[in-house]
Image (cartoon, rainbow, N blue to C red; front, side):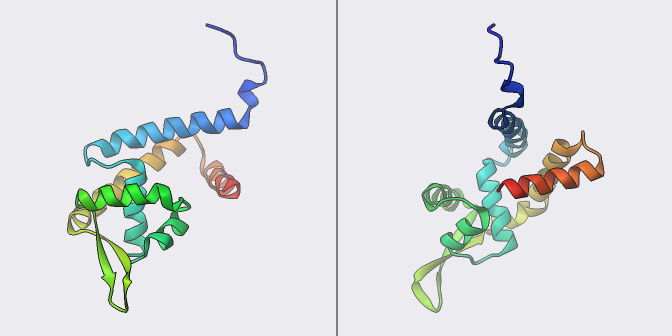
Length: 140
């Protein structure tokens, strides 16, 4: 095995990438039994937070691009996690809602996210957790 460059352990891109991989992989395992991806779970949480958003509004809330969201939303409609409804005031506008199926799993899925967050933060004391979250938000 080749030796890593001496400055690699201090490379922020490397560190953030590895942290993302670990967090993403753990949550992915938790969601597998529901047939959801991490991003699909994020969409559901967004729609539980504000049902009836348009795709553009959801993208803005979740900080994802429309091209990424398009395929995710179609798959979620096809698998029964969300429903699209025409806006009563403007038939050209499609509004997104969590489905009845999503509602049945809401509490369990939110608990899964909370467990994932707790697992990620378990090595930090309360002050470090608050600081870590603030620093991540500042990066975004």
